[in-house]
Image (cartoon, rainbow, N blue to C red; front, side, top):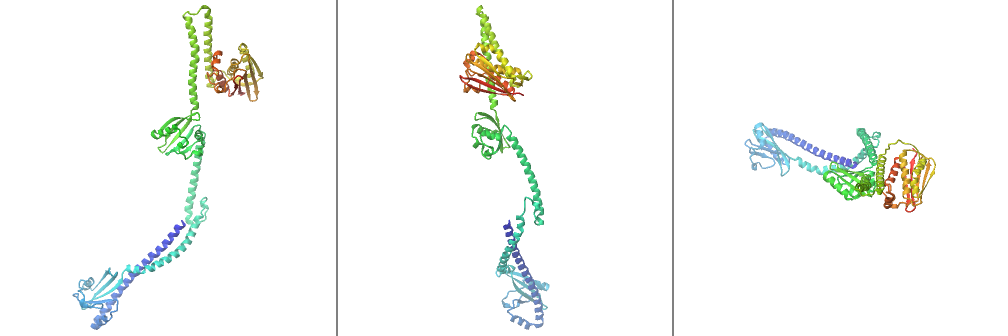
Length: 552
């Protein structure tokens, strides 16, 4: 800025000098021309008087004065040149048609200016009619204004250069003094500056705009913080792309899905982050139809991709984790298939026995056995249906019985007594250890949990094995541990034994019966009471299942 002001001042000074010189030259030339005219008018008056009084003698003196710059010509009324102090009168052409001569004959005086391109001069002619009818004409040659200008151009340029040098020195100082306060302006506090009064409106406007800008930036910052808080607390992934598929914004959930941090992917092309075919297809469909959906699998989890175009200049992609949903759907299908299978087997058995008896193919002594078999299969079906209904209630987190204080130690002893005959039939001994441990819960559900755990420990135990039930009050919680010396559970089955209808040892399960829902009921019953279950088992060494419940 300083250099621009400096150059402008120097150029302005040089231009001013040049224009002033030209104007002065023009004015001086015009003034000189006017003075020349006045001189010619006066000379014409004096010569006219001299000719009238002096006659031929005065004319002879004029002829003798050949060095004069003024040209004197006497012309007869018919245009014949009678005298000329600069040329031979006899050789000159007739001047009757000259403008100044015609005006003098008609009006008593006349004038004319004629410019010579060759000599670049202007000649002024002034003619008067004398008393004897003759015309006295005086002429004076003056250089044209252009010639005058060109003659003084060298001097003019010299002056301009001198003025430019002087102006550069002055302009540099003026510029420095002018710009110095501007360079020292404190834009953080515009109104606190001590500078020109002329800058006060400018600084006031800057202060006002600074306040507005600060206010707008603060609002934008709050909006950005709100958006960041909202998006980063979303479980769904959110990605904003520009028209070139570069990431404008990505929340932490989406970045975590792709295996990056949010700051690492901003500005990068989405395909450089993940080139999965599902992502490419989604982007292509968004470009072609404006909206698209797809299923994306990564790290053994499933995500629903939903994208849409934003005014054709970008796109937004939402990512939903549907792993649990798909697992639940798979479980529902498996559950339906398992229920169908579990119900179909006893129904076929009942139908088969009933059909044999209907057709009279059973001996009288075998009827009792067939009826007992039908009764047992019907009992299994009822047990299965009751278990399914109980699981349904637990899934919905509801029970038909109000919650009350339950002593798990007393409940464990009661459950053992219910299963005493079954345990003795297999030669399995059961012990209950601990003391009073009260929780707030539903007695029927807790009884089902303990019954299924102890029942499984008897079913899958070895001949003459043992089952130990330990109940412990642990302050805010109550812990119940059921361990046995049975066949144990393999590593591959441990994660699935709590699934519905899952049996770790299918061949053994067929021999001892059961619905395959026992441990599933245990898991859901404990979850209903806000507790958790742990399993520890080794094949051939037994199984230990521990569940912990809060007292309140």
